[in-house]
Length: 425
Image 1 (cartoon, one colour):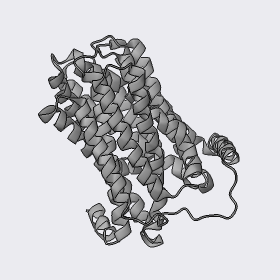
Image 2: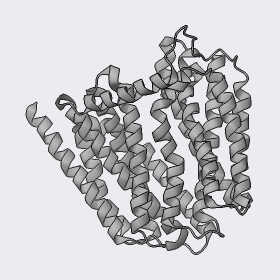
Image 3: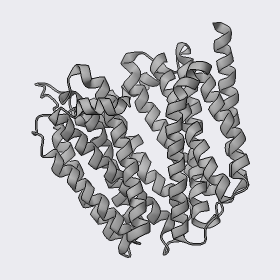
Image 4: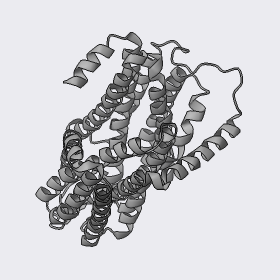
């Protein structure tokens, strides 16, 4: 495989190996911590789980990415990146340990959420710093390869960490606090691994004159607004339509995620252990759908065009989601997990391509920051809507039908847009 061949080439570079080790350990810890947090909120026997509690947990996990992400670079250009990895992961190890203590102590829920919020907020700085540091450990000829391999390895590590958390929870420890402590240990390992690199190796270079922090943040905010104006210009309507469609599909995926969590907890199983097994299987099948989308999308988008492929993905979801979801049965639920993973990721890959192709290079980074905000806010907003609509057992026909209508609206809009593109050619 090309990815394996590229990885072998890059692993000959000593400092790339060390930076990759920091990424793998850090993101595997993220996977462990996030699954532990989710299972604590949803599957703790002593807690009466509600859709509102799930929505709160999603907000804790995702909103820091959205609110901090666009401004993280301003601070990262002022701090030594090696030190960000060291102190950021040390801080997360301490905070994750505190989260574990709060899980077993009788404390108000808000204190637990504050601890979890701090852990996930630091993550944006670490992930952005890992990307920014890559040019310091590989040469220009290998940079594109590194940008492909390194995030892929990190995503696989996060998925493996989540799987490890499920395995530890099901096989050995019935305590979510024990799983969180495993995440804390991995964060500590990531911090110690960063010490293998010199403090100044990863930059940034010191500039003699640098704007004040407040001025830099103001400039960042203005540049984000300029990116939005660039995106909505008539000549880039293609990218704007794709981004709006993907935001709505992400909303649908978020609402269905809460529904699946409630079904696994109360609607389809009689105990928490069976519910955890069912949720783990559903997540694995959704991940398989993501992988299938990565394989299918280049061919399908080449034949149908990116707009046409988004329309097919949304249309397929509009038809299959109610057909598989309304029975509220285990078998159809698992098939739906795969289908929605495939259609959501397929549409996202096509959207990424359309945005990259349509916007000017000088605006691309800022527009993807806006994209990131929309992506996560839509997911959290969907969880809030689901919290208002779902009964305790998750069996809401109204939510399933509403999501199908939204998918259908995306399919109709993108089909119409794709038709206009063909008529102009």
